[in-house]
Image (tube, rainbow, N blue to C red; front, side, top):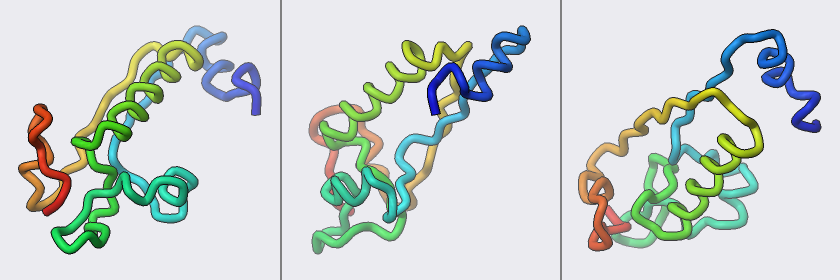
Length: 106
């Protein structure tokens, strides 16, 4: 589907404001991003994928991917705004650190 055929574009043309409500981190194991990048998931100490099936926000490639997504929201989709929701990972307080010392494993 071309962006010009998108329902959101039709809404914008009618004068309505269009925003996206985005929950970063959620990635179903069957999605193309998960299949191509299983290393992006939050891991347990033993290296297995954490039961939350969330992408690790402390991992640089994930941060770069999110940056590209936000650019797409703003530049390609021309949205009027977006809300970034918070997807909590139980027991993963160390992942929420904003510095480079954040741990990738639980």
